Image (spheres, rainbow, N blue to C red):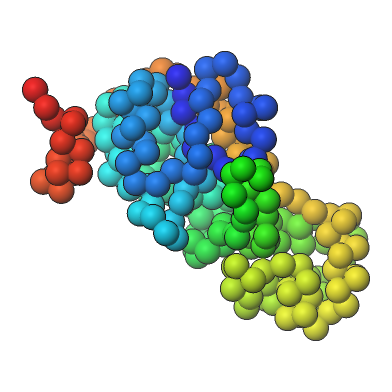
Length: 234
């Protein structure tokens, strides 16, 4: 099975998954190891938890790669971890990953958003900056907004804390008419996180059953063995 950790970036992931895929909630520490214990032959990391629990550990991803299990990342936490672990063989997918990998984007908070519970389909309560940027770019391309106004919106969005970032708050911060901004969003809305998440699912669908042979050795440190002793029982 190919395990994909996803939530608010692609709430309808189960409807898009093929029979080889198992959709699990956003990952936190220990979830990747659990997936490996359950028999995962590939891992897709899209969304991860980070505020109230320990986030998915880089070392878990390295452990998977050291076992020959392909690991893909995109859209949100997955894009961040893919940039951090690409030297070791993790595969980054999508534009957001590319922006971080190239240095065009640096802040982790650019992908963060406030959302509701899984039971309600992870409804978005704020707008992640990566989607703001993609929407503004689309609006420029469609001739909906000029570059000066676009710059005002972009700068304003960066001044609003990610949990408070709604289009209304962005319009207020930019001192622009809220109705104008709503009209812009209605015509040019671009959900870059969703697009990248779908791209990851397509990539993992055709993933080989084994990652490239690692040219490095996994270091099972004392802390690692303490956290996951079940991996080393004889």
